[in-house]
Length: 173
Image 1 (tube, rainbow, N blue to C red):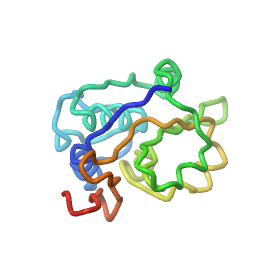
Image 2 (cartoon, rainbow, N blue to C red):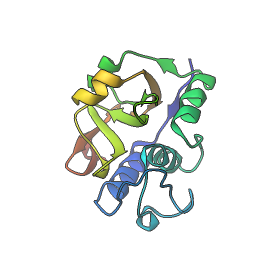
Image 3 (cartoon, rainbow, N blue to C red):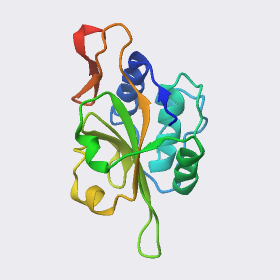
Protein backbone atom coordinates (compact mmCIF):
# COMPACT_ATOMS: atom_id res chain seq x y z
CA UNK A 1 0.00 0.00 0.00
CA UNK A 2 1.22 3.48 -0.81
CA UNK A 3 1.30 6.50 1.47
CA UNK A 4 3.21 9.72 1.95
CA UNK A 5 4.99 11.32 4.87
CA UNK A 6 4.32 14.87 6.00
CA UNK A 7 6.71 16.73 8.28
CA UNK A 8 4.64 17.84 11.28
CA UNK A 9 6.18 21.31 11.48
CA UNK A 10 5.35 21.99 7.82
CA UNK A 11 1.84 20.61 8.30
CA UNK A 12 1.38 22.81 11.36
CA UNK A 13 2.51 25.94 9.56
CA UNK A 14 0.30 25.17 6.56
CA UNK A 15 -2.80 24.61 8.67
CA UNK A 16 -2.20 27.74 10.72
CA UNK A 17 -1.77 29.84 7.59
CA UNK A 18 -4.86 28.47 5.82
CA UNK A 19 -7.28 28.37 8.76
CA UNK A 20 -6.73 31.89 10.05
CA UNK A 21 -10.04 33.08 8.57
CA UNK A 22 -8.77 35.11 5.59
CA UNK A 23 -9.84 32.59 2.93
CA UNK A 24 -13.44 32.21 1.77
CA UNK A 25 -15.20 29.45 -0.13
CA UNK A 26 -16.29 29.71 -3.74
CA UNK A 27 -17.21 26.80 -5.99
CA UNK A 28 -14.41 26.31 -8.51
CA UNK A 29 -11.98 28.62 -6.68
CA UNK A 30 -8.29 27.72 -6.71
CA UNK A 31 -5.13 29.30 -5.38
CA UNK A 32 -3.70 31.91 -7.79
CA UNK A 33 -0.61 29.69 -7.95
CA UNK A 34 0.27 26.49 -6.10
CA UNK A 35 3.59 28.15 -5.21
CA UNK A 36 2.03 31.31 -3.76
CA UNK A 37 2.08 32.09 -0.07
CA UNK A 38 -1.08 31.19 1.88
CA UNK A 39 -1.59 34.93 2.54
CA UNK A 40 -2.11 35.40 -1.22
CA UNK A 41 -4.98 32.89 -1.36
CA UNK A 42 -8.40 34.53 -0.99
CA UNK A 43 -10.86 31.75 -1.96
CA UNK A 44 -10.74 27.96 -2.31
CA UNK A 45 -13.26 25.28 -3.05
CA UNK A 46 -12.84 21.84 -1.48
CA UNK A 47 -10.62 20.27 -4.15
CA UNK A 48 -8.63 23.47 -4.53
CA UNK A 49 -8.03 23.39 -0.78
CA UNK A 50 -6.94 19.74 -0.71
CA UNK A 51 -4.62 20.22 -3.69
CA UNK A 52 -3.02 23.43 -2.37
CA UNK A 53 -2.87 22.17 1.23
CA UNK A 54 -1.19 18.87 0.40
CA UNK A 55 1.28 20.46 -2.01
CA UNK A 56 2.23 23.03 0.63
CA UNK A 57 2.27 20.50 3.51
CA UNK A 58 4.68 18.24 1.60
CA UNK A 59 7.13 21.08 1.07
CA UNK A 60 5.91 21.50 -2.52
CA UNK A 61 7.00 17.95 -3.33
CA UNK A 62 3.74 16.10 -4.00
CA UNK A 63 1.06 17.58 -6.24
CA UNK A 64 -2.34 15.89 -6.32
CA UNK A 65 -4.49 16.74 -9.34
CA UNK A 66 -7.35 19.22 -9.17
CA UNK A 67 -10.97 18.12 -9.00
CA UNK A 68 -12.75 15.64 -6.76
CA UNK A 69 -12.96 12.78 -9.26
CA UNK A 70 -9.34 13.32 -10.35
CA UNK A 71 -8.16 13.30 -6.72
CA UNK A 72 -10.11 10.09 -6.02
CA UNK A 73 -8.59 8.42 -9.10
CA UNK A 74 -5.13 9.67 -8.02
CA UNK A 75 -5.55 8.11 -4.55
CA UNK A 76 -6.37 4.78 -6.20
CA UNK A 77 -3.48 5.10 -8.69
CA UNK A 78 -1.04 5.85 -5.85
CA UNK A 79 -2.19 2.71 -4.07
CA UNK A 80 -3.32 4.51 -0.94
CA UNK A 81 -4.90 2.21 1.61
CA UNK A 82 -8.69 2.45 1.59
CA UNK A 83 -10.05 2.43 5.13
CA UNK A 84 -13.42 2.70 6.85
CA UNK A 85 -14.39 6.31 7.48
CA UNK A 86 -14.88 5.44 11.16
CA UNK A 87 -11.07 5.23 11.44
CA UNK A 88 -11.07 9.03 11.12
CA UNK A 89 -11.82 9.11 14.86
CA UNK A 90 -8.41 7.62 15.64
CA UNK A 91 -5.68 9.81 17.09
CA UNK A 92 -3.01 7.90 15.20
CA UNK A 93 -1.16 10.58 13.25
CA UNK A 94 -2.59 9.58 9.86
CA UNK A 95 -3.85 12.29 7.55
CA UNK A 96 -6.84 10.75 5.79
CA UNK A 97 -8.58 11.98 2.67
CA UNK A 98 -12.30 11.33 2.21
CA UNK A 99 -14.71 11.81 -0.67
CA UNK A 100 -18.37 12.34 -1.39
CA UNK A 101 -18.87 11.62 -5.07
CA UNK A 102 -20.98 14.02 -7.10
CA UNK A 103 -24.20 12.93 -8.73
CA UNK A 104 -27.17 14.55 -10.42
CA UNK A 105 -28.56 15.72 -7.06
CA UNK A 106 -25.44 17.07 -5.37
CA UNK A 107 -21.93 18.30 -5.89
CA UNK A 108 -19.18 16.13 -4.51
CA UNK A 109 -16.84 17.00 -1.66
CA UNK A 110 -13.29 16.12 -0.64
CA UNK A 111 -11.68 16.74 2.74
CA UNK A 112 -8.88 15.67 5.05
CA UNK A 113 -9.26 14.25 8.54
CA UNK A 114 -6.47 14.29 11.11
CA UNK A 115 -6.91 12.91 14.62
CA UNK A 116 -10.69 13.18 14.56
CA UNK A 117 -11.10 16.65 13.04
CA UNK A 118 -11.55 17.61 9.41
CA UNK A 119 -9.37 20.00 7.45
CA UNK A 120 -11.53 21.25 4.59
CA UNK A 121 -13.00 24.14 2.67
CA UNK A 122 -16.76 24.07 2.59
CA UNK A 123 -19.63 26.29 1.55
CA UNK A 124 -20.46 29.16 3.85
CA UNK A 125 -17.20 28.89 5.75
CA UNK A 126 -14.10 28.36 3.66
CA UNK A 127 -11.14 26.52 5.19
CA UNK A 128 -12.20 25.16 8.54
CA UNK A 129 -12.15 22.12 10.79
CA UNK A 130 -15.02 20.24 12.33
CA UNK A 131 -15.59 16.93 14.04
CA UNK A 132 -15.12 13.97 11.67
CA UNK A 133 -18.57 12.59 12.43
CA UNK A 134 -20.49 15.58 11.10
CA UNK A 135 -23.76 13.93 9.92
CA UNK A 136 -23.57 14.96 6.25
CA UNK A 137 -20.02 13.62 5.98
CA UNK A 138 -20.76 10.31 7.68
CA UNK A 139 -23.98 9.79 5.70
CA UNK A 140 -22.55 10.58 2.27
CA UNK A 141 -18.88 9.48 2.42
CA UNK A 142 -18.02 7.21 -0.51
CA UNK A 143 -14.34 6.54 0.15
CA UNK A 144 -11.64 7.25 2.72
CA UNK A 145 -7.90 6.65 2.34
CA UNK A 146 -4.86 6.85 4.58
CA UNK A 147 -2.85 9.52 2.80
CA UNK A 148 0.12 10.60 4.89
CA UNK A 149 1.75 9.73 8.16
CA UNK A 150 2.38 12.82 10.28
CA UNK A 151 4.37 11.46 13.20
CA UNK A 152 7.44 13.35 14.32
CA UNK A 153 10.47 11.13 13.79
CA UNK A 154 12.14 12.32 16.98
CA UNK A 155 9.30 11.93 19.47
CA UNK A 156 6.80 9.71 17.70
CA UNK A 157 4.17 12.31 18.57
CA UNK A 158 1.37 13.08 16.13
CA UNK A 159 0.18 16.66 15.73
CA UNK A 160 -2.87 17.56 17.77
CA UNK A 161 -5.48 20.05 16.62
CA UNK A 162 -6.30 22.96 18.88
CA UNK A 163 -8.02 26.23 18.10
CA UNK A 164 -7.60 27.34 14.48
CA UNK A 165 -4.43 25.34 13.84
CA UNK A 166 -2.24 22.46 14.90
CA UNK A 167 0.10 22.27 17.82
CA UNK A 168 2.47 19.40 18.27
CA UNK A 169 2.71 17.22 21.33
CA UNK A 170 5.92 17.33 23.34
CA UNK A 171 6.33 21.07 22.75
CA UNK A 172 7.98 20.72 19.36
CA UNK A 173 6.29 23.81 17.91
